[in-house]
Amino acid sequence: MAKKDKEKELQDGAERLQDATLQDGAEAPTEGADEAEELKERIAELEEQKAELEDKNLRMMAEFDNYRKRTNKEKLDLMATAGERIFKDMLPLVDDFERAINVQSDDVQSTKEGIQLIYKKFLAFLAANDVHAIETEGADFNTDEHEAVTTFAAGEDQKGKVIDCTQKGYKLGEKVIRFAKVVVGE
Image (cartoon, rainbow, N blue to C red; front, side, top):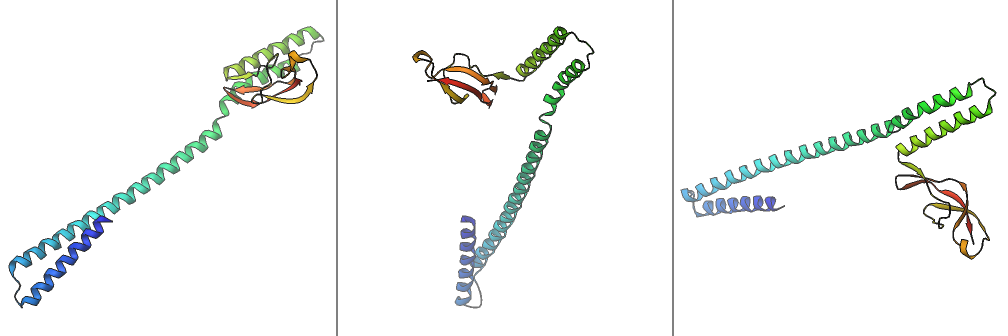
């Protein structure tokens, strides 16, 4: 805004100078003409600077718009492929389940042991991905981690404590991804 004001002031000054020289007579003094010429040069200079700044501004806006579009595309790509690693790591567990299903054995004990091995492998997979169960046994009821399914009269020492867990809850890092469904003592 200040540049426009300066530019206007310079133009007004040049016009006043020109008017004053014309009113004094047909011949304008050379000193006034030199000053008017300097003002015109200065105005041309300022207009050139203004055009340059407008061009820079336009280029910066275009560059920022390209940056915004690029980062949005990268975010969409990341969201589309984020689960790929986890699913890829789960495939060996699916293979183990398929092998367990296809076993032609009537030995219940060996089938049970095989399922327990798969279960342990799956728990290790969850731990490797920072997923862990929420502790409920003997814990104080915490609405940030537990969901009360029902309450149970259990005496004064069990008041406000988790008595039983009907469904385990899990955290991913520090974020609860499933609340533990519990029975709370009252």
